Amino acid sequence: MTIQQIYKLAINLGIKADFRSKQEIDKKLKKEKEKFEKLDTWEKKVFDRERITNPYSDTRILMGDPKKKIKKILAGIDIDTREIILAKMLGDIDLVISHHPQGIAYAGLDDVMHLQADILSQYGVPIHFAENLLRARVLEVSRSLHPVNHERPIDAAKLLDVAFMCTHTPTDNLVASFIRKKLKSARIEYVGELIKLLREVPEYTQAIKNGAGPRLFAGSEENRLGKIAVTGFTGGAEGSPKLYAKLSTAGISTVVEMHASEKHRKAAEKAQLNVVIAGHMSSDSIGMNLFLDELLRKGVKVVSTSGLIRIDRSKKRKS
Ligand SMILES: [Fe+2]
Ligand SMILES: [Fe+2]
Image (cartoon, rainbow, N blue to C red; front, top):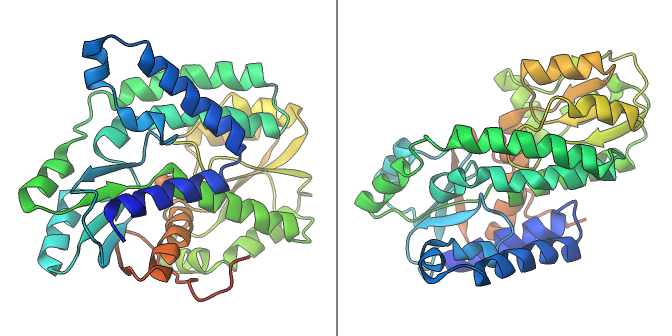
């Protein structure tokens, strides 16, 4: 496979697993194209044209010739200069893939957050609440990303001639849909049973051994699950804490997320919600593994690093 084919595969898998419909995503891409066409010549020159064909602003080829043939990759949750040097030292790595974004993909992380509004509205939060609360939070995240040294690892990759890309929201979509499917088919009634179910997923079992397994952040294991919402697995960064109250009013009793800050946990508690935290590195690993298995099926060798709990499901029949 070439870098371009790996990049396209990530986007296509992300779209397939997206909680939004293909039509909704196409509409978003069409809007970007219209925006681009209205720009003047100078603005067109600096516009990130990938936005017209790739709905995920946090997923990009960061360094390397897209036509380069790839036989072996090094994949991790966070890739910075250290892992780039590691790839060079290993000697036979053709491409490094990070889950968390770097470079332009990191600077553009805020844009994918809008997808959270669509997810929340699917769980019954009126779209005007979801959009307005998220808009403020997206701006906050955008401002916080602005001063970051986004290009640092890419500069290292250029100096060492190491091809580098990141796949963030597409693989977060894969884990979100994996968890949603798992919960849909499970016969569980209590919060404790949900935690037990998560613990059986190999990445989470390993995370328990590593000291970061699934756990309860709010509510009680003895509580009934009620209506479950799988939020906080995809959509860039943490949304607004004010949305928990809206989810509760919309009839949700239990929220399952990858991770949550203390501020968010307190807001969820105040809204009387049960909150189950699956785990950050382990959940990110599931999403990456589902993508890496596709690469493996296509003959690309995979080496994992940087917190990625690698579980190979490539020989299992796809459900
Ligand atoms: Fe993630
Ligand atoms: Fe993450």
